[in-house]
Length: 184
Ligand SMILES: CC(C)(COP(=O)(O)OP(=O)(O)OC[C@H]1O[C@@H](n2cnc3c(N)ncnc32)[C@H](O)[C@@H]1OP(=O)(O)O)[C@@H](O)C(=O)NCCC(=O)NCCS
Image 1: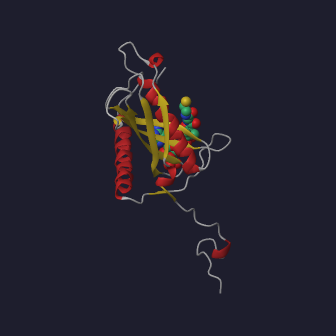
Image 2: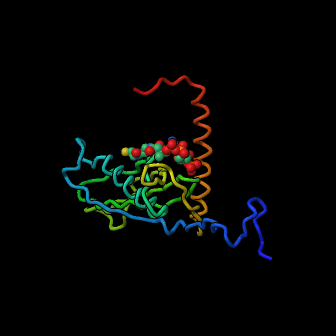
Image 3: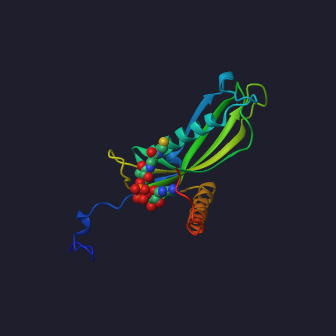
């Protein structure tokens, strides 16, 4: 006898297959750009917004790769600069999906700079965490497949996503007690 689903009574063979996950590694993307003199700020280093744009772009590529379609930035959770970038640097951003919700993806991005005049090894310059939401043609959220870590480092990043989510919830509930004015 064909087994049936207890809730829907439909034969299990006729049901939609369960959504299978994708590996964290399969979402990995990298993107590079050169910093030019025209990109300097008034203090002589590269503008931080250049790095932010690179981070958002590579995070989008990773989210789109994982979700097999378009995705939008919903939040830049944090971004930390460890060192400045300078004219002549080749700056590379590496992104991967480190956690998934129903429609959202948490993207981790690491940025390093290969200096024009300096050590041959790239130097870490920034790190960021962003949340993207997969959207359909009408801009409405659409479900994503769960991401699966495989290595110890990926499991650690996956656990860090859970910690950041818990912090986000705690922050939202703490701020809800403050009568914040509506932004203009
Ligand atoms: C992203 C967007 C489609 C979400 O629409 P929405 O009606 O708020 O959808 P939902 O409330 O169902 O939230 C969708 C997901 O986003 C997550 N989300 C919403 N706001 C969030 C925030 N501030 N931080 C983190 N995640 C957030 C929700 O938790 C949910 O995740 P889940 O499905 O994995 O549980 C909508 O807010 C939007 O279009 N924003 C503008 C995005 C954009 O244009 N970005 C580029 C700016 S230039």
